[in-house]
Amino acid sequence: MCRGVAGSAPTVLAAAVAGRDLADPRRHGRVMLPNHRTMVVAEQFGVLESLFPGRIDMGLGRSVGFTDGIRRALGAEKGAMDGFAERLAELGEWFAGGASAYPQVHARPAEGLRVPVFILANDAGADIAAEAGAALVIGGLHGTDATVAAIERYRKGFRASAARPEPYVVLAGNVAVAATAEEAARLLVPEAWAMAYSRTRGVFPPLAPAEEVAALAMTDREREHYGAALRGHVHGTEDEVAAELAALVERTGADELLVTTNSYDREALLDSYARLARLAGLPAAP
Image (cartoon, rainbow, N blue to C red; front, side, top):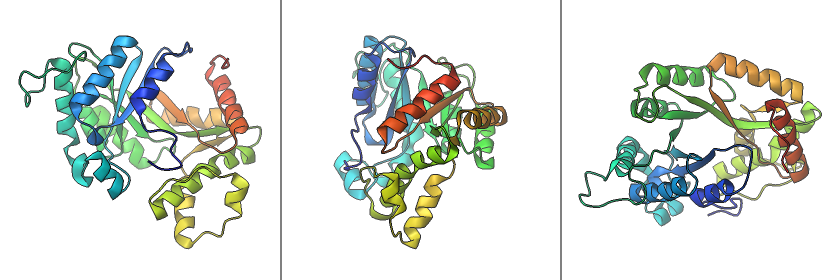
């Protein structure tokens, strides 16, 4: 869709990752539900679950295409996210045996399969996740009062489902780890600028070196978005990151952290992941 996006086929990527012999037995797949027909999503995740039993999670987001042109190409309207709860319920019907709106139509091989549902949410989406009895994935590594309030509301309003009897919270966000806090902060710069660029131009650019970004003469609007994109992430040395993540988990009661980091310097990025893996007690990548 954009030069800065390597690929946008999450179920294909999930299959590629699940096919590798990695330490973590579970693989997440993320789909923006308003951009797809529910039957297609059910069939795709049904195939994934059949190929890799017990190793697939179905992450579902509410966002629609980033620009008007992309939305038109996907056949999705900007207001499509307003009907997310209904689309989520319809998706569940395909796995249960068939959507009531389409009698005698079946989504194979989804029927009878149970794929854990994770709702990718902001403040409002927390209520939908609670009502659906699904896990909540929320961007919250900054641990703001609004994030904590949304999590508390999710837990309080959670309705147990056959797939998930108890609420489950995943905090998602960027984490950068390096030998010094300054080096870790530099890792966040390329994506922060890409976000600022996209907010002011409607398209994601390829990531640029941190030094190149630092030399840019940004407009006031670009600098505002750039500063906002730099906030709310965890970065620092291994000790600093470990302490900050521990405090965050204690404050929110999160069951899991979902970490991602994008940066121009691939070697530094791999080093960051290796340091983070050590903190989590995970084996080094082959």
